[in-house]
Image (cartoon, rainbow, N blue to C red; front, side, top):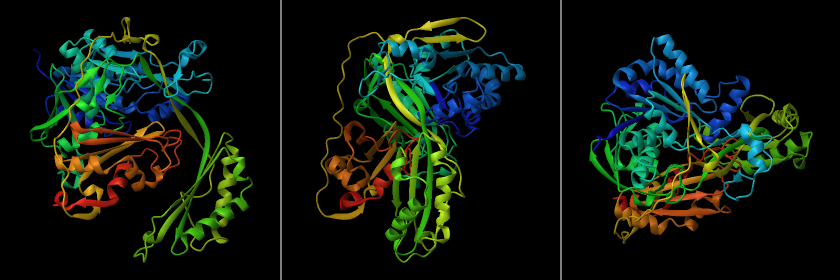
Length: 585
């Protein structure tokens, strides 16, 4: 039986801590260094980068990190696996090779390509092979798409490691694939080892966002030491797929059942976590503390994956202008109405002339305010249109013109007048896995094709019923929901996910009985008219809600103040409900 493999993370997003690779390599023993740089929004950013700099659609920060740690990784036999290749994994591999040459090093570098579907669009659309992820309708016009990338699984990575690669760079893989690949390679798993693969995917999901597993973005952060400099996580994955989530000694933050549960809830849907390698059943996960900053995850069961791969499509959405005005003191609603009326009187266009007009009054003001800031609310008008000129300088000038002629205390937010800015629209699609093989390229060597098709095989899943407990009875007290429950929220295209969890069996029983879909609509009025899915996950004392359409056409197009729904869970925790006093004590 092979020893567990320790896989460390050093990046949770494009822009994460540059020193994290060195911290993980030098801070303690690891076998593999991974990082996640990609998200739907990142693909859009990289597409715009590639337009300005052909071949440059990859995460250049990863190349900088390799310059810091490549020599140490080679000396210690630490493999590096990353999706930092983005839209140009070949360009990223060449850049890493150039750095290696400057350092006098000769690593074996591989990259995985084939996920980019743009060059094949004519062929794919002619055969109705690309279909909308939710409706199943064939996508007919892809002429304006900036990106079209299938989400690959782990088997191209496994093949590269089997060929002796020291550094493996991919394009658009799933976030967990950069962890599942090294684990499958190390333990020699087959494609139908559902439970082992599911365990690795769950571990990869926990550590893929870096410090979100070690105290970052954690509801109960006030209980966590060293939050000013949180350490990055690792996962020790055993041959059966069970894992221990941990972090290096002496680093800030913590690894606890709470932090791991929070990250398990991040950007998920129902109990079935669909992926290209395995469907991981989140209703089978068991968590236990096995030491300081060590949480064991076991019992994870898996099923065959879908026969299709998800595809991330980004297209230009047009141009937008966000106009923000401070409303201070008394008569806030009357001031908002006057700003609205006066703006349209000054604007060279009518509201009906724009593709979209969104208005939002944000009441951040307080009664009897102790500061100027506490007296201030905000009124926001967002205009969208395909015509850049229509949302340009003329409309921003129309708002600025009101400065001396409308409400008392007029103050604009965001500087002076300016032009419209482009935004993108995210669209999820799917394609048959058989239509998108992975290509593994050894830099300076051969190219091999790896099938994305996963063979069918029996699977037997038994969900964990969770704790056998009853909600406390007795007196209640009005208190914030967050006094007893934690939350983690995020974006899933135009939808938002909102996961909530309890930290005791009794609190879970109360949470499950109390937080119905109807109660959620009451507590978060913004969701009242939206479709909501509710998914209880008793095994980890959690409920996950998927709120459809909250983010409109995706992160880059959203007009919400929090366009990624990162703070949605903390808003819910701030709402007051009747809480049993037994839980508050």
